[in-house]
Image 1 (cartoon, helix red, strand yellow):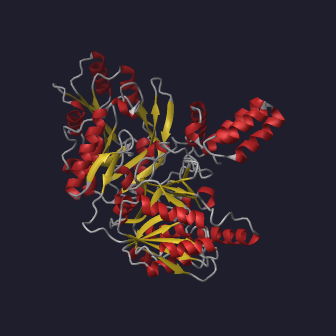
Image 2: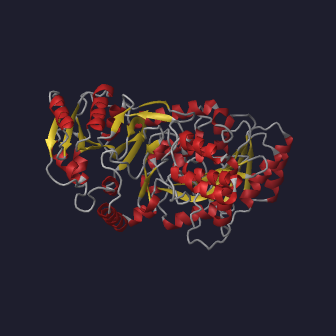
Image 3: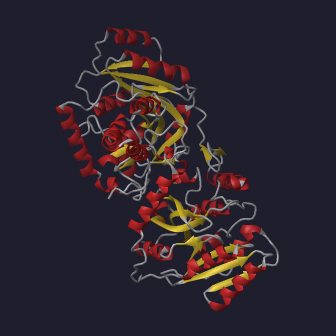
Length: 616
């Protein structure tokens, strides 16, 4: 019986996690088939949560809540205690949900607030009666009753007209706040009074107010925000900014909050935005709501598209917006100069005819972008077939073979290559990659030439169509790990992160583009301390430290037949060198590794799957 199961798993799983199956087999031998299946499900989830059952995810979140929210109501007084106006538009709201919403405000541990409600001409008397009852009991609850139904933007503006607070926060009529929501917002303000925009993590609640699907968000991530409104809830913003941009706009209903935030960015610097890594908002997921299914409100997508187009018309008229790879996501297309910049693709190699020729030929045959040169950095090749291939490809005017006669040092080889590169942009390319998407280089160049962008990375797949790289997360495995490693090709990832352009702290050097002047500005790769491992992460962090944003795009796709050319770190010498590189990175980048701004401390650092952090 087990042999059959073992054979199927070994050959048919979307990747080959042999260690997983062997560990589960040990459980089977000891405790039987039931325990084997249980252990396999748990271990498999640790690697690929998108394949797991919802019950497993739900139980993990319940455990997280027990561990992390037991002391959430403990408070200490704030020296700075601004009045916060909570803006709520209502319309024929379910009585129970309306009561729960209002009660969640009344039970806030922070007391300096006012609840500003605008009823949008509800026809349900129970909605009106409920509002009047609460307004008569609590002077901190202000209600305006609109005569005509104007939809959410007009209703929200009516509620804003009641606001007197220094900050305004937005709450939907059937959602609820965590008891410490306002307290945590003000706590963050006391750390930095210059903040103008604050947002938190959130989860969803069902009809019975059962919590599920937590969204542990990235810190401020501009390119992610331009791909989808990941800020969503809970958001608090300076009232004078909201007034300066004339509140919410009619005609953007469904994405009126996205439009408001986009217009606010013209008055807010990145340093004035803060993220609170706590679940402070519970979004009601019922049929008909966007929380239930993003397809429920298609008009929200159209409004979001229009809002983005408006934003970039103000900031860069050459930028165009198109539909993203998923519903309610977008792709921002940055303009290319009339003359394509020259790109120098650096490919270190030693022997390896099969993989190198596959790499070179795939670039030549599948790359639409034409203004590039290939510099093959030959690290003492002796293979006759490879040497003959060098002679063959030298006939192409845009391919050169440069000899590098020194011991293998990935950093030094690439630094050597950059010195000989003629391009405005350099691309670090492993000799074991293979192009999939014809537009890969055009896509990466369009981002690399942006003045605010440092390194640009691509989507890389293993040969079996599972993900090898989708951005780098700091802290995983001690130093850094690849986002969504082993996920199936086509997976959406954690809250669509596999399908949208976004910022990461680092990207892999297996396929990395950067302007040559930036490469030189940060001193290139560290050929002294990081000869083999983590030199790409170190390089990206140097760019980050200089104020550039690193970026990953799913629209540039390649295969990466990882480490075929060099093999594993399996000798005593390699292990010692690797340990030294790990220690060097931990010492140099300790703060960054402990707190990756593009990740979230509530997510695991044991695996690359964006699973809930129960590591302790």
